[in-house]
Image (cartoon, rainbow over all chains, first blue to last red; front, top):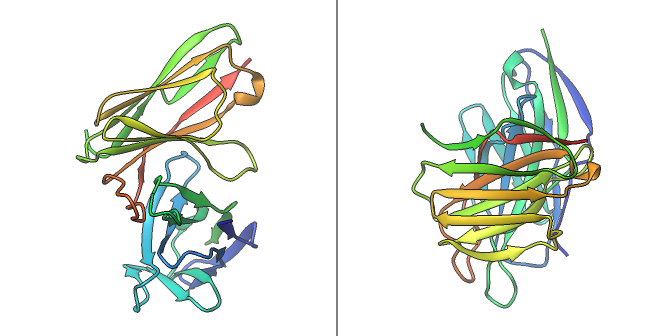
Amino acid sequence: AQKITQTQPGMFVQEKEAVTLDCTYDTSDQSYGLFWYKQPSSGEMIFLIYQGSYDEQNATEGRYSLNFQKARKSANLVISASQLGDSAMYFCAMSYAWADGGSQGNLIFGKGTKLSVKP
Amino acid sequence: ETGVTQTPRHLVMGMTNKKSLKCEQHLGHNAMYWYKQSAKKPLELMFVYNFKEQTENNSVPSRFSPECPNSSHLFLHLHTLQPEDSALYLCASSQPITAGGVTDTQYFGPGTRLTVL
């Protein structure tokens, strides 16, 4: 069964430093997508970055990059030059197609990592 | 309005009340989703609609009743809820779900924080 594991319940980082949030996944599918979302205390889930299983290059979006290591089944999020506004919960998620060719649009989420940026 | 909006943002209801949550997306998407986020639990998918047709009901109790009148609007009708149903309810939308394909990026609304007394 598909599963997302985020082993860091909480992390602290100094402002302007880089931080890596860990995510490992488990799937036997060849075709899947990996996402990172940010959830501030207001509750909205904000899409940050996407990596397809067949993408050879690591995805980057501004200060966010996804360190995709397919053989290790890991998809860590790297935030460079942390800002106070980066303090939030961060969720890793995976989408997949059913083995029989159907796709139900499922996203499997991890439990999240709470990032706190210190001034 | 842009993106995905949800109303109300906060809702307190008794167990005998009937209420509805509303979601509207302005992204031109054709797939819409309801998720439940309880404290200290991963996000749980509840319902999926693709081109107004329900394609997924993730074993959700019948006291939750979804409705999708068109591709832009999604409702979640609530009745005789239990205190354990208190949670953040998130709506999301995406490009259409295609058979054999991996779901496109889902964009979320701000959520409705529901408290059942």
